[in-house]
Amino acid sequence: MSSKEDKVDPFQPRDMNTPRDQRSRTDGWVGGRADTWFGHYRENPASRSASDSRRMANDQDYAREVAKNLRQEDDALVNSDEALLAAGLTVAPVSPGIGIEIHGIDMAKPTDAQIEQVWRLYLARKVVFFRDQGHITWDEHIAFGKRFADIGYAFGRQRALGKNNSPTDYPEILRLYSDEGQPFAAANWHSDVTWSNRPPLGSILLARKAPPVGGDTVFVDCYALWDSLNPVLREFLQGRMAVHGRGGRDEAAHPICRTHPETGRNALYINPTFTNSICDMEPEASARLLAKLYAKMYSTPEHTCRFRWQDGSVAMWDNRSCQHYAVADFWPHERRMERVTLVDPTEDDEIPFWQDENGERHYGKRLATQESIDTPLSYA
Image 1: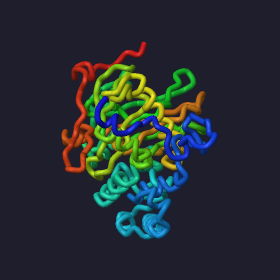
Image 2 (image 1 turned 60 degrees about the vertical axis):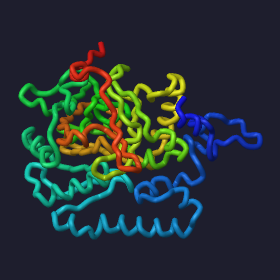
Image 3 (image 1 turned 45 degrees about the vertical axis):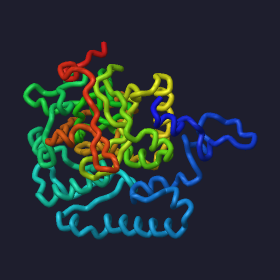
Image 4 (image 1 turned 180 degrees about the vertical axis):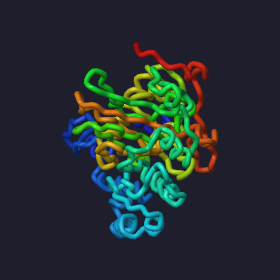
């Protein structure tokens, strides 16, 4: 065991789960939430205001100041953001901390001012949504993405996860089509392509045809997931790496606490779809800790938003700061989605890293050959 493992015990029950009196419950869900505490309802406001939730729970003056600032910020965003108004845009937050609908833009011909405001909101809200964009062509979809970053293949630096559904002449377009005969949805929590040593920056997903009911996508704020972890767990995980890969293969190691290269904020960067294990832990301990973390991560609706698709709707998300889950409840209806993938043009920012308090970046590493990572995986 490392000195960090000697210092803290990630499995020790804490807060409301601490054994006392005749309490015999050991599942870690006292209070109906995983690894919770009496001030849990302050976690999300604390994360989106960069405040201390535990201080908010114990210092009423501090909590009142945070509340005042949040009210002012929320009101200004919706009612009096001069930069948005000047760009001809209006917005409607989908939840307090993550997700916002942007109205007034045409993706086929956005202005420079609109691009600037979309990027500002993208970094702040982790995922932005547009409506009524069904008229754009593949070329216009790609051109819109190029206003923000480089455009990758269907899976960023890689052409395919398994099979490739891209049009022959448009390797940048990933077609995600589903119907009664061939049902499909990415119904699992994930950040895109974390099995790659150079995972993509983000995605722009267009609904060509949405189902009449169902098929929503849920997004979760990974800044809030990190911020809301018990301080003991944050201390234990900071600086550690986790192994990611397709089909249980070990293909890349990434920091569990990932620092965003533009906002400087830390995000929890593991997911049950591609994360295999935590480095430098015994397999049983790694599996147990990942299960504990997933229980906390995905049992907190306060950190999520849910988007209802319509024909022509678009979601543009930041893989560095959020995860998503495509809800597979729409069968037998048809659903036709098309995605463009954004990649960071700067390799030093593209490769996931954790930045320590001295400003030093700690990068993950490739665990398989580049040829192996670039080769589509057969799930047969």
